[in-house]
Image 1: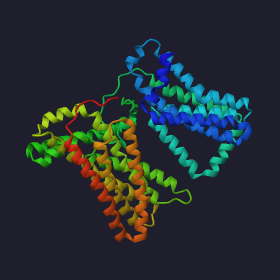
Image 2: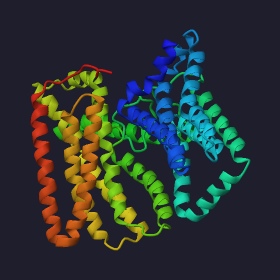
Image 3: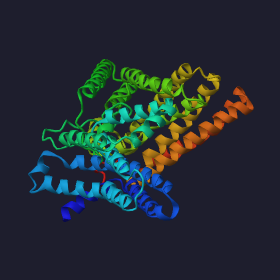
Image 4: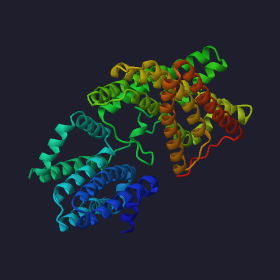
Length: 471
């Protein structure tokens, strides 16, 4: 029983804040369900919604955490599969069986349909932890539902009234769970670890479990990863050849950048822009069919997408500390500050790359949505991304070591970037493009440079660390 309890605690050990929030969601749903006799059946629908989305995200976290434990050597442990099955049974009992049983005892309408739907969402969450295409399919379904809300509402009412809904939902949940568990419990060699500083947007870093274990990938993902690897190899060979022909400081810095940031070379950036543009184009074209669509949201989403690079940079730099010892010995810097300065100069290239990609995504959104004020959106996105990327790079270089602290930093920087974007959009509309952009540039760039200067001074003062980060 102790092993089952330890397996149950895995999401709490690895993502404590998210796990506590989801357990709090279950508790609130249970309280609302208990209030059904006094309030009415309407509150049971709210409770079912909380249970459904809570089960979806909880089983996603559960799959991410357990997937890292399903290694070939783990199956040599006595009773590993049995204890894993017992833990899964307890999870299903908590999120599905217990609420459904209480709803049946209270004679809540459509209790069986609600329980079957919660079980289906839990199976989808478990599958999404190991197969990213499941998230894309669910995302596409939500887009279609937003595109035709009337049709989605009629379909939902028909499913609730149909007697075939419960057996079909149970059959589909069993099929999805079987496919995801078969992939999770398959014994095979894991793929080789890749650089933790690979770009997160379409690289392999997103397909990792919570403990950093690489996930098994499909054929399409392998082909896309091979394209990025080929561009990285080509860029490294070109930088090495140029440095050997003419060993200057600038070419030496390019070589360090190709080593630290393998997927941030020009070819990889172009490839990533094309792939992300295809996904964004589909999303924007689908959302355009909704009424009251605000084209300025495209710029906000572009800023959010650009800033998503820096949290992964902070995690990757901590994971690479033992490997950076080889780089230190290879460079043989005169002082420790020179080595820290080399890392700063190499990573600073992410600021113009982030601004370039954000402006490109914003321009694509402007073309697709036929935005009424394209210049206002482009200038706002470019200026805000410049200041926000300087701030994000600075805080992730000298920020907190713990997972909770890094999560709070990510939240504050992202929320601040979104707030400044909308504030800048209003400012440009109120003061005009010329004067408004000058004021916005003065505020955002001044703040970003101030934070960057302070962080750079602190980073140069610190001695290089080559110790592996604490788990």
